[in-house]
Structure formats: C-alpha cells, structure tokens
Image (tube, rainbow, N blue to C red):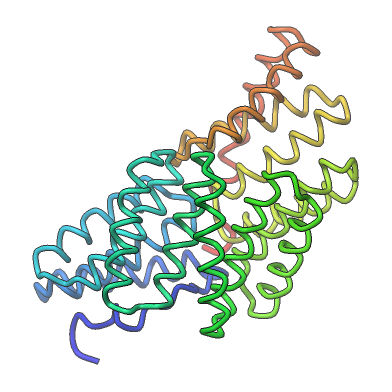
Length: 324
C-alpha cells in the first residue's frame, strides 16, 4: 500500500472496544503524515480520527476533523475521499441536530457513491440518511431508503452493515407504532452485533429493546437493558450514548414516581450533551420535556433545581473512560 492510500482499506466497522487506543494511533499517524507533507495521508488520518471521535460522542471534534479532511479531499480532487468525508460529516452533523445540513451532505455523498458503484457505502449512506429523514418526521422517505440499505447489505453479506440498517429500521417502525416488529428487528440486530463483537452496536440494540420494554410497562427488564447498555457505553467512552441511556432510565423513573432520580438523571444527561454538542431530536426533546415537567411538578421548583444541579455535578464521572 502506497503512501496516503490507507483510506482504500477503511472498514465501516471500527473495533469499538478500543476507541481510545485507536484514537491515539490515528493521532500519531496524523503527525507523521503532516511531517511528510502528504495531503492524502493527512486526509486519511483526519477521516479515521473523525470516525473514532464520532463513536466516542465527541461530535464537535469529529465535525471539525471531517470538515478539514473534506477540504483536503477537494484540494487533491479525490472523489472517493470526498464522498466519504461528506457522508461521515453528514452523520456527525445529524447528531448535532442540524438535520437540514446533514441531509444535504448525505444526499451529495449518496449520489457520488452511486456514480462510483460503491455498493457498501451506498447502503451505509442510505441508512444514515434514513435516520435524518426519521428525525425530520419523513417516515415514508426513511422506509424507502432502509428497504434499499437492508437489501444491499444482505446481498453483500455485510453483517455489520445489515445489523446497522436493521437497528435504524427498528427505530423507524417503533416510531410508527409497530412495537412488535421493532422488537424483532432490534433482537436480530443485537444477535448479529453480538456475534461479530460489535460493542457499540450491541449497546444501541440494548437501548432500543429497553425503550420498548419501558413502554410496555416491563420496568425491571427495561432497567436491566438500559444499565447493560450504559455499562458498555462507559467502557467505550461514548458520552452521547451514556446521555441517551440516562434519559432512558429517567423515563422509567418517571413511571415509577421517582421524581428526584428523574431530575438527577436528566441533569447529568443534559450536562453531557452540552459538553459534546449533541442536541436532541424533536422527539427526544418532547420526551425529555415531559420527564422534566413531571419531576418539577412533584418536587417543586426549588427541589427540582437542587436535584438537577446534583445530577449535573456527576456528569464528570462519565467523562473519564475505562478503555484509556
């Protein structure tokens, strides 16, 4: 493999059990490529670093890295690299809540992938674009994209991609009111991800199953699923995933009338989201507002403020990763 060609071997599946170690290696490679003055190599390292930062929930850093990588890809007229940077930047921007910009970036990436016949990346971009369409409450568009994505990943025999697309599909059909199908999709995604050792994906599937269990009143099972996912997220150092898990646990605490715990969990999650620049989707915001309103009504303004502040002070505990 020649200099600057590492991107050709990029796998969508990163070994998420060793994110911190991977990030250090990519940072070291970036230093070396910069010393060599190799633009393609620099762009490769920026893409890898951005992908790693994204999976750690460090969206502000990931966005900046992908933006810099995209500029370099454009400078050297690398269409494949440009498409990758557009897709990964679009995914990160979507996690920051800028769905309009994310859709524009992903649509451009998808068109480039189609033109170049890059089937795996067509499937990936379609799944991420479906997530954005779902966040924009365009369920029909999301389903069309996911039908293509699932089919392509299956045809390729790409287990990681198939599990990823099933997970997104589960989220979409759950929002459309089909909890049984959503649970089946999440269980299938969990099994696939467990089989290939995909810790990040496994945590995602566990959360989806926890949400379904909570809505069905199976609070003990929901807590167990959320807490298992939370443990995995902490090992990964995924602060966005941690925040989402805490918000799920807050929903169970609302149902069990544990108002102080609701306020504390929501306070911690809000602090983490602020730290990493991860905004809520409209549906997440509506759900969180309901949780906060319920806790405030039960505790009063002063009691709620005290519990919220206590939760925010514990956020730092979740910043230190255990995979250091």
